[in-house]
Length: 265
Image 1 (cartoon, rainbow, N blue to C red):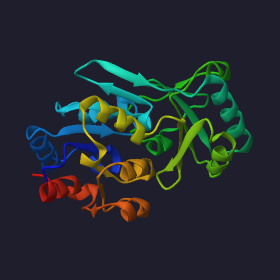
Image 2: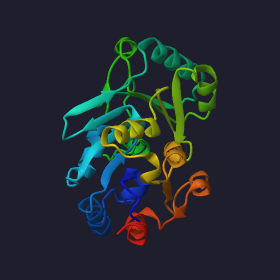
Image 3: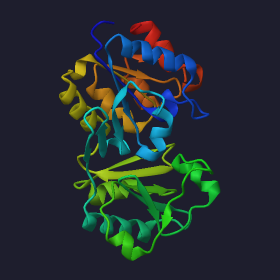
Image 4: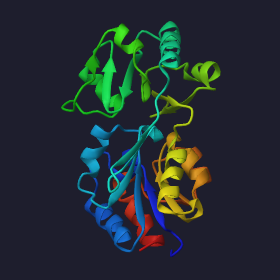
């Protein structure tokens, strides 16, 4: 497919298998795309410290989109764009969630690759944040410190009333519920995967209609509407499948490679 000039990959549930590894077949097929002159972009909800461990052996990825679009980096130009939630809005959201949250809810804050919480997160709950037991845990700080920061992203696990946050603060933040609505992710209103990828496309001179995108969850939905050739994983949510041009195999069955071999290389 000669009209594909860039490919965007989500990580979890897409390029990564359930064991959080990139399969040899996926690796080799993506590399073939890169060698043919196609730009490779990774767009993930993860922070740099968590995402980079998976793409460090992907030397052909120049642009990385982290935090669902709140942070963009370009390796070759050594540049970055960072968007955070204003301190006063973060304080209001935190108070609102604490007032309405269930006792088992866990709230934490990402600040440009640092992770903070007021309450230690048990090892048994780390997996809900995409973190393994041997990965770095959030720093435990007091509420005065939390009140002084402008977070890149607010994470809340086990908060079923997340739609109320949209009703109250939707003019200021984007709110996305992923992982079966178990994990609520709150970013600045202008931070989204689709807006961040558009910034990258402007930088590399590629039109969105010439972009193929792979994804599996709600935070990929905007990209699916923006890009010319959206491909949903077999394990993706139904909303992505409904607007995809193609549904490939699951992330545990080399779905990325299967689609690229069919359409691109």
